[in-house]
Image 1: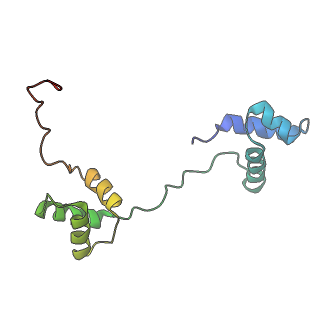
Image 2 (image 1 turned 90 degrees about the vertical axis):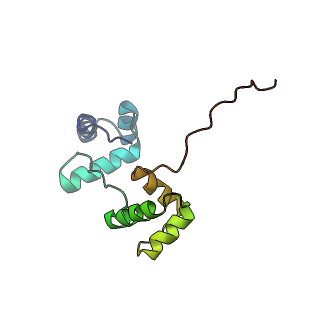
Image 3 (image 1 turned 180 degrees about the horizontal axis):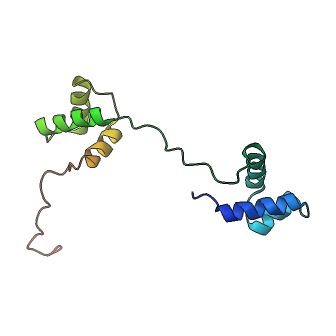
Length: 129
């Protein structure tokens, strides 16, 4: 979700500080929630800024660069391995224990495809003949 613009934040603060309207009235006028206004006012009082906080970045990836290099080595040694076999090989190579979903995302991130051969050509006979 995108943060509200700094312009909107400043207008909401100005409306709150004028004292002419209550918080619910200001919220209805600007189409924002009362909790957003109360948090904005609290943040402005404590830091003096109405700007949004920077994005936090989320959790660190389970498979770092070293583990991805180990996974690449495992894929090069046995390119037709299943995800379960890749997980076991990665663990044996000193990598972290990870789920099959994490392995699948890492394999795609490394540019490897799980499908080993192209699709079968279409049949020459029409279906239902």
